[in-house]
Length: 385
Image (cartoon, rainbow, N blue to C red):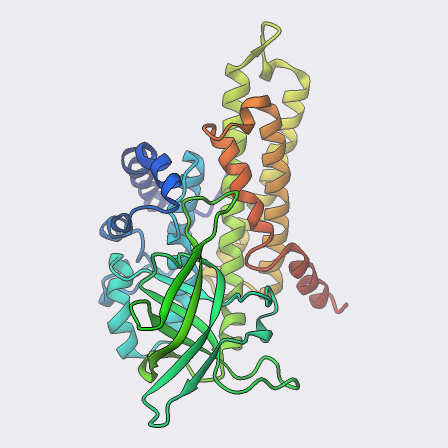
């Protein structure tokens, strides 16, 4: 079915992204996988091309776009080529809304120019060992100094995407003692300078997929954070997190749709080329039927995701509907990519083939940003259950 979310400007941007990937990403991508992330200067190159700050207002050096659609194209073209841009999606799609909605003018002037240029890469640190999806149970603490000039941050975080290379990290910490009667209260967001004394990057976690997206453990030992780097109001973090969950989950959903589409394209190309018993694999009825099933499921997913993108651009995407989009897209992408890998036979299990990367990379989409089970809980609550 014809998609209607993109116009001529979007397609011209797509051509630029596609050329960039072919020239500057694909030839060195295996090196990035071995290293565990792109080189730091790659993000500055993305900033130079305007890819990081598409939605940053022009007065701060960005593209001034309100729509998420250009970011969608970045994800689609990366998936089509079987590559990724490290932690840039978290930087641009997840963190920017926190800054735009909650930062003071002084903070925006200090952070956004570097955000757009790639000179300041951001990460967000919510998850802790033992908390998982239960953010209300966060134990990392930040106590205000006696003179009120700074917070003293202590604790640890894990599964932090972009944590190894980040220059600034949005750390969710408890600024008032834990209250069992108000578990969601007392949490604040501090924008921590990664060069601060007492801030340290622990293990770089080895994953089965997303191997060019650095994922790290972070620890804070009496880290001094100026009160000027408190994002928004003290004690309001949980409401800020909830406010931005819809776009975070939409980002995962359109990424899942992109990987599923890429998987089908790879499977079609492979089965047309590969011969078994003297005939192309694509000529067998089973191959045709499997790909027909995948294509149909992708179309349903794409319609749902595209509608969610439009709603998000109008600030009308609700948390339950974002949960529906994430649940359906990630579960469907898992089914589609598994079927497409099967059509590759043994070669589908070899990492030099893009389908193998897509298979490994997509598995985590049913976990991060809220597990599929959490999505079902949100949807059930919306149904009054």
